Length: 390
Ligand SMILES: Cc1cc2nc3c(=O)[nH]c(=O)nc-3n(C[C@H](O)[C@H](O)[C@H](O)COP(=O)(O)OP(=O)(O)OC[C@H]3O[C@@H](n4cnc5c(N)ncnc54)[C@H](O)[C@@H]3O)c2cc1C
Image 1 (tube, protein in one colour):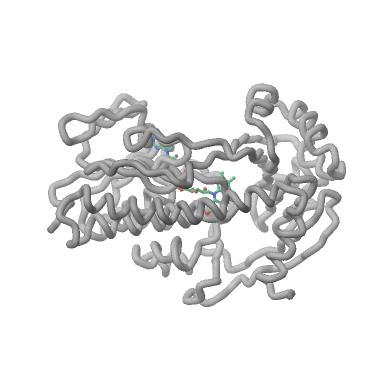
Image 2 (cartoon, rainbow, N blue to C red):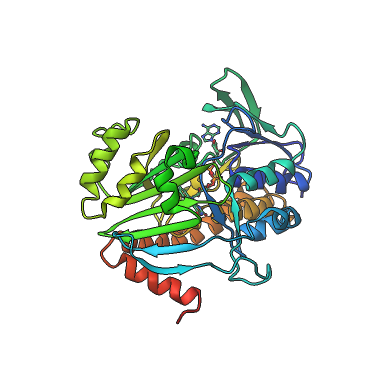
């Protein structure tokens, strides 16, 4: 039975989850549009490299017939990683296997987030993504949805998929469950043209990735060769009300003052990160959906990716889960097995929620130990095993 015959599908959000789903459904002949709030495709995609896993992200790309494009653009030139303590003392300096066998379940090739988006966008039929479409509300009219966008346009759709990330506007149509604060916040910083704006830092952190763990906190600095920015991230345990209203993250001096206090047990060398000109900060308190969440399936609306199961990024699973959701939802919606859309969506949600209860638990566990006294020792022991030093 063709459940999608004469149905229009609106995917809200053109992140890795939404675009993978659009590609997979389009290959099966479905009538699909992606409504994305970014103004157009040239908006810089924030974030650094992503590792794709054999049995999730790569599996979805395989089904989408995009492995050749992926192999042509993944980062085979893995750079150095140094694991250091709060005094920047190096404990491990290594290069993870950069090339590998795509059939090997342990090979986790890396790709820039922007490159992955380009591969997915290029695979879609022209006009599939409707840019500058920031959804602000949705209304059920009979068994369809009317979607309202900030730019004043409205669109009707038979099936709505919320792929609109952490602060999903679609989530509330599916469940009243809300994410809870994980107890850890991330502050991301980006220094444009570090050679000019932060020469001292640039020399210090050149070539690869530095991950520092100590005093129950972390700092990660990524300076990819050839990149015009130096990106870094801090993560630490905090109450959101300690940071949200009390620090002006648009004011570099305020942030430096805060850093000196919060990271007072760290070597002053790290303060250089906050002294550069042209630096931008983004505060990201890390939320998580409850691991045992459940809701009653509906026949014409569901969620994928962070909209469905937001979690902190400390297991590197978010993108992989979003892409696997896309694969499993596309398979359910186009399967001959189900007599109606509700059964197809229920099958998908069942798989997705079961998987999240396992992956989410692992993620919260990582979040805990990475922000505890044993963080560095545990990370060293894991890395020594994975790079075969033990
Ligand atoms: C600091 C940080 C580091 C991370 N590192 C990793 C990592 O190394 N590996 C990993 O697997 N995961 C990582 N993650 C998690 C990962 O980024 C997410 O899990 C993943 O991007 C989820 O994909 P998605 O498609 O569900 O959502 P998103 O990537 O968030 O995409 C959502 C899309 O919807 C659009 N959108 C949002 N609201 C609206 C709206 N109202 N109307 C229309 N469009 C809208 C957005 O512009 C965006 O394009 C990290 C996350 C953070 C915060």
